[in-house]
Length: 226
Ligand code: DC
Image (cartoon, rainbow, N blue to C red; front, side):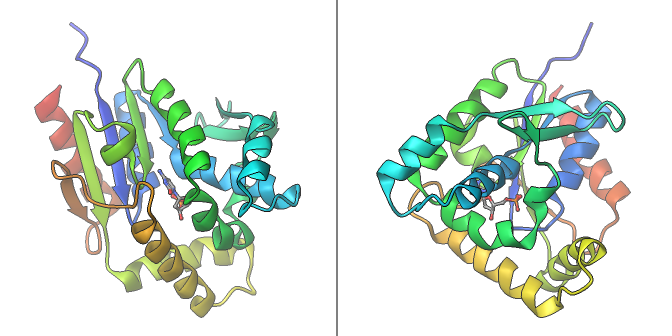
């Protein structure tokens, strides 16, 4: 008998390994992986490219009408990648230019309404792992498994620095550190759907464990449910 399909949410601070764990779990369970942060990043890219003044509600509303987001599998890696109006933007959205603005854009009520509606639709058939900031609290408050990830600040900065340095050797550790601190602050203090740990979430601190160990812990939680 096939095991029952569930919804797994992974929320937490920036750069604490949410997407790594989400991809590991999705691969192991043959579930769909959705990176909700990629949606906010793609919207930010659209706003920047089209010079949208996102402090102006009417400009935001009009712009959102012209944004179509889609996740499609990469045929080589099998991983889902985000498309903005039919263009693959999976890699451009990881740039620091986007990281510097995305928390402001993600704090806009209309933007969240737009993204959350699509995220909920994606989870209708279950069998999904979604990571973000408000997935267990707002998007899927009834998810069967909610994981809240955390890691020491220094560990997070080092991880993100390594990731960005590969693409841009001019980047400094101070730039990365201040960007992470700024995003964590805005993400957890905004009025709409701030980052917070759901009451029924299980906490996973991966400061001192390997990727294999974190998968083992989460896989055990999943096994207890399905
Ligand atoms: O996970 P990430 O770093 O790619 O997310 C980019 C930004 O998007 C992050 O600073 C906060 C925002 N975000 C959000 O507000 N809600 C989500 N569900 C996911 C991301």
